[in-house]
Length: 232
Length: 232
Picture 1 (spheres, rainbow over the protein chains, first blue to last red):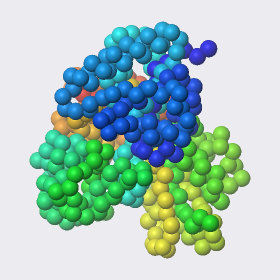
Picture 2: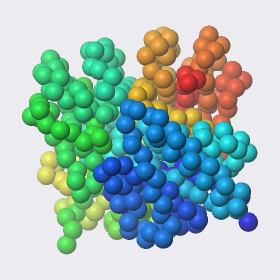
Picture 3: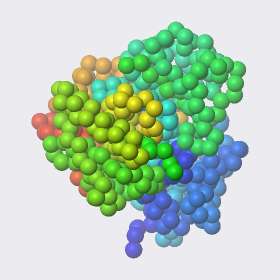
């Protein structure tokens, strides 16, 4: 019999077909599928819908805000549940949109589970990240041979942007919400940089905007990024 | 009937189960599946084996060397074949290991096909890249909330490494072959940086080495990378 395992499963960027065969098989085989749920519902549960796993889906409510304390408690409680299930000979999956180790919630749980039981068996199933989904949907290469890529959360400011654009062919700004207005103002300074805003790539709510300046004053989604790429 | 389409299909890092449901469906539906073949055979064909597509697989020989001229001719000829098939109402897929727009051959073909026929219908199916596969297999997060990632081909030298490690939590060095010895020597200067060498992540030939210094003097694969991550 297979060792009871805690799986971190990446389920891809949003299109239910961008789940891997392995993720689909593992989710079919485990006893419980935990998925994060925010205040706007669960994006992960919607991606999983066609797989018909409803009976074993269990939502875990997270705030995902800067104030981490509440979520820390949730991770701790969830880790206790996971370790107890593993001891009960059950396998558990935690699903994350995109990839489990790319700006994801899974990492917190992995740390918490290991802390409770260092011997617990953990396996990570990588997924298609928003990085590759956005690149595919816009047709902009993330990198060609010999090129460099930087992935940077824009929420920490744009002061570094000139230096980044000097050293990297592609700069991917994630969590662009907070800086969208300033970015819209600054982009004209870089006439040879192509900029594309991508929200929820590959989903039915996908939004791709090539005139980033037009986004000034608009609300942008948590699941948005901007690809900046030197024309080559 | 569906528009004849040229698909760029990412088939993941090597484990045949890390193909997406979409990639599997598209490869099932198209008329021809072109795959790159180097001097050591075709890694892509081995990933596709379990899908049983043998009858429509067509290898395209590439050198993948720094000297691009020969490959440019192959891309040009292949693009002509693709455009002619599209006009013949056939759909064609070009498969790439990992993701089609992440250090891949697909981009060259996309450009060549568009040049021959700007109206040709092209669709890109993103895949799990070696970036996420390596992170999953080592359990090292590519990035946590607020962290920065740089992806840099090591073949262009290591002079920048100190500056990169100062600005990025994770630095992924790809194509590490040429600099492995120098890197092995320099790593002790960064005692708080965890380094892991990953070759062919997720395949039966996978090799993960945490003592990077031990690799000095060894041959490394084309499909290798090193994750450098600040201990957090």
